[in-house]
Image (cartoon, rainbow, N blue to C red; front, side):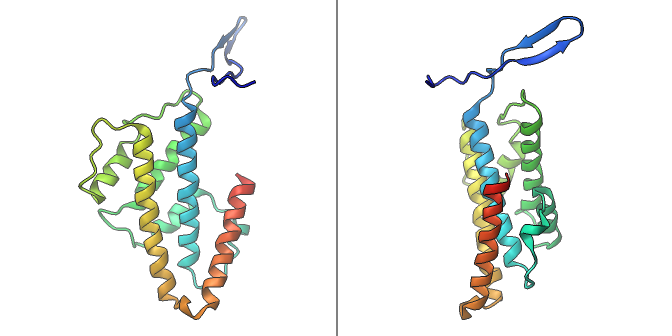
Length: 186
């Protein structure tokens, strides 16, 4: 039965003649889980934005683009200029995800999230990050990025005159296909 404390096997530290182990108990699973959920949510909005900005019916799912490749596509369209430097912020955000994925001792701290804090402060001067925690920063950053992408998606769809019906249905089925890939393949 789960008693609320995570117990995982220890880490192998060295095996140069003498095997050394270290307890694996310093991971903040709640923060890591929140971070990964925020990353997935942002990727969902990013997928929808890319599909909404394309008038062609590309096989987005078949392309199997990485998060970094999607951000590069976003960077190329030039719609998110200062102070709304979403591509630069997302590149940093993804680098944190990579560090979390490949380094069991990596810690999410306010210092690590400083570029995300600076991004939110540029966009909304009313946000105050003094005495905040990692969870609040992650939630604010994700909310701001997703709000901007949602606005851009709406603008793209209006530009394609989706009120006629057909285009919106095609767009929503492409986004649904990407969302299914996100759930199945990640």
